[in-house]
Structures are given as C-alpha cells and as structure tokens.
Amino acid sequence: MLTDVGEHLGRHARADLAGRVRIGKVPVKDNQRAMRKRGLTKHSSSRWAGAITRASEDQYKLSMRCLFDERTSLRRAIAKITRRLAVPCAERKGTVRGYPDQAERFQKQRRLRTLTARLADVEQRIEDGRPAVVVGGRRLAKIRHNLADAQLTEHEWRKRWEAERMFLTADGESGAPHGNYTISVTPDGEVSILLPEPLRHLANVPRGRYRLGCTVTFTHRREEWLDRVQENRAVRYDIRFEPQRGRWYLDASWSADTTILPTPEEIRALGERTLGVDLNADHLAACVLDPHGNPVGEPITVPLVMTGPASQRDGRLRAAIIQLLGIAKQNDCAALIVENLGFDDARATGRETMGRGKRGKSFRRTVAGIPTAKFRERLRSMAFHAGLVVIAVDPAYTSAWGGQHWQAPIQQQTTTTATRHHGATVAIGRRGLGHRIRRRPGVTARDHRIAARRATGQTVFVPRARGTTSPPRTASAPTQGGKTRLDQGDQLVLIPDLEDRSRGHRTTCPEPASSANTGQLA
Image 1: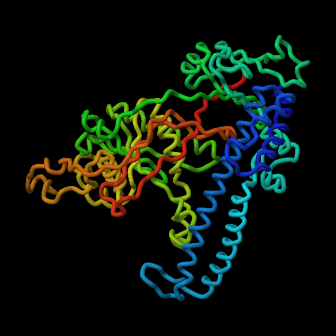
Image 2: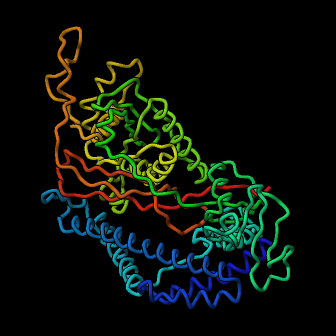
Image 3: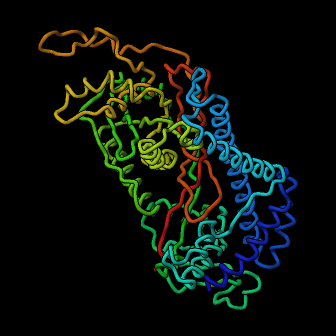
C-alpha cells in the first residue's frame, strides 16, 4: 500500500515540479501555487496537494540557490586564473605570480575557456529561471550507466531509483488529531494514512484512510514527540523506503519555539565558563576557559575520522559532538566557541591557492575532508537542545597566535602534550569572550623557578566596538532523506575578530535547515 501511494503521489509531484520550473523565476504571488494545488487536489487530496506544491517550491528555491553558488565559485576561479595569466611566466607583479612554464600556462588557458563556457551556461539558466533538477538524485541517475563499477544489477538499481522518487511527505497542522491528519501516528505507535482520491476504495478504516498493520517506535527525543502528539501540535512526517535493508522508516520533525539565548557579554558578566573548540582534519581540540579567558584544566583531544561512506562520516561527527557537549556539561560551560571557518574560495580556485604537485594535492585532500559547514550545523542544533550557546568567531591567525602565545603556558600546567591546536582553542575562546588573543609581554615569566611575576594584566578586558549577533532562532539540523524544506535554525552568535585587519567585514549566519527524528517501522 505504501508503495502504491508513494508512486502515485510521486508521479504528480514530479509533474508539479516540472510545471514550477517552466514558470521560472517570478515573485511568490505569481508562482501559480493555488492553481496548481487545485489541479492536484482531484488526484490526491487538498492536504497531499498542499504538501506537493510546498515541496516543489522549496526544491525550486534550493536549485536556484545552488545555481547562484555555482556562479560565485566559477567567477572566483576565472578571476584568479585571469590575474595569473596577465603576468608573464616565471615572473611576479606585486602579490600575483605568473605560471612557472608555458606548458602549464597553456593548460590554464584551456581551463579558462572551459570555465567561461560553464559560467555562461549557468548565467543563462539563472536568467531564464530554469535550474536542472533530477528527482531521485543526479548521482543515482549516473550510476545507471556504470552498474558494474557500482556493483549493482539493473533490478537493484531500479528498486533504489523508484524508492527515491516516491513522495510520502505530510505537513502537520496544530489542532489536527495527533498533530497531523494526513499521516497520523498515535502515542502507541499506530500509523494511518489518508489515501489519495483514486485509491480510496482500498481503505480499511472509515474516512478513506488506511491503517498499517505495524507500529512505529521512536527512540531519539521520544518525550518531545509525545508531548506534541498528545497536545495535537503540528508534526511533519516523512515515510521512506530503503531497498538495501527492505525496511520502511518514518521521520518526524517539528519546529522548536523561538528562544532568546544569552549574548557573549552576558556570559562573561555572569562569570560562566566556556569551551573553545578547534576543528581539524583528524581531531577536535578543546580547552575550558574561565571568564577571563585563561585555560582551565587539561587540554582535550577528541578523535574525528571522516572516512568511509557518508552515513558513517555523519555518525562519527555526531559522536564527536556528543563527546564535546558532555565535556562542556561536565565543566559547567555555558557556551562553545568555534571558528566561522569555510574554504569556499580556496576550494573554488583549487591549485591556484592551495598549492600544486604532491604536497598541494595532499593539502587539498585534507581541506576537502574538513567538515566545516556540517560541523557548525550539527553543533548548533545539538547544543541548542543541550541548553548551550554556540559562538562563532573570525578564524584569522588563531592557530598562529595560539601556538605562539598559549601553547607553552598550557604545556606548563599539564602532563600531556599540548599542541598548537590546543593553543588555538584558547585563542578562539578569548576572541569569543572579547579578550585580546596575544598575551601582554612581560606579564608571566617563562620559567617559574627563575622569576615570578604577576599574571593579572593578561586578563584585563579592553572595551572595543563590537559587531552584531544573529537574531534568535529555533533548533535545526541538516536535512535528511531528500527533504528540501528549510526551517529556522537555532542561535549561532557571530562575533567579528577584534584584531582582524580587515575591519568592516561582516560575517553572516549560515543557512539553517530542518530537524528530524527517525523511527523504524517494526
């Protein structure tokens, strides 16, 4: 039954998405959603039609944002190559260096023409408002032509393809039975769905509904889900099928209430501890800081192995974040301070900025393996539910100044080995609290056996002009299971660098996404 309903709704969802793409880039009032919804209602129901048109609109907006991001990336690469081509081989003009030989210069000229052609195509798509969307996934579609390399038979690929193109998503509504009338889940785990109009004759309960013969069980955040369904508050459900396991899964998601979280100034004024975190390719370095920005206790290292399939990488990242949150709770920390790190510009230009040859290739692989955006999104969502604040600061010079000014002091108060990454955590934490990173010279002696000096000057707070923080948000986590709807995320306070030389630059809050819980159909 779920297969029949999913395939029926999937066909109409793909047709509606194609119609939305044909409409193009228009204001919201001209996207013809009401008319498309009326046309879909006679083939499903008003609630299914509303979910389909909403998903089509969200998918279209997401695809357009991807086009804008691709255009930005191509422009960065073209600008960088153009500047280097303007300099003769093996010469330098200012900070721009020419290519070492004619052979590489020729290859870069060919690449420039390729990038220019791609940019023209992307700009034309943006102008027409016609993004390319593959329902089911472009990667899975390409696997069809390489089944031997993917170790799949055509029948196995077909099952995965059809499962990805089903549509079984229902938005919740407050006041409806158990928070959702289309897909209803009772507190006992009993599931019933509203059948589309052409399939109403298959109903086994009144009002055109079909009750499943199995029940679902939620383990993660079950108490929150029970509170909502017992009070008939809105809950969104997504049903998906995994052919590899032969199982159906039910995802439940909802928006959390808006919460005003404390600012860094309030955290410092209340005398709360914070946890500075430095994200690296193979581990997370952390250090507890007091309100004055001084390290407390032992430096912390959390292993982080980001290899293997995407599902394993995501699970390892979640496990590392859970360990960080446990450390913060154990040390009575009120906030976690991280870098607002991103390699968009460097990844767009590749060899032009991150080196070439064997060493450059190794460095580029390392950068590609650092999950900067996913780490921020996961951390702020999970920290929100743990009652903690996440503060993001400018990453400029944190590793250099942390290793220079704080690695040795940390090493003096610990029996373990302190690395420059642990020094960077102190620099990150001090920047988030509003203190200077650099230690004032002549305050603390290098060797306490030779000289003893007062260490009060290094914690003096110097008021300076501060930036702005992001507005209050609700909890979020990266989208799962092909969802495209974006809900408000939880608070991520962004603090510009007090010692940044590029003053006037404003950091922006990353795009939030929706949260989800997963239950398995028993």
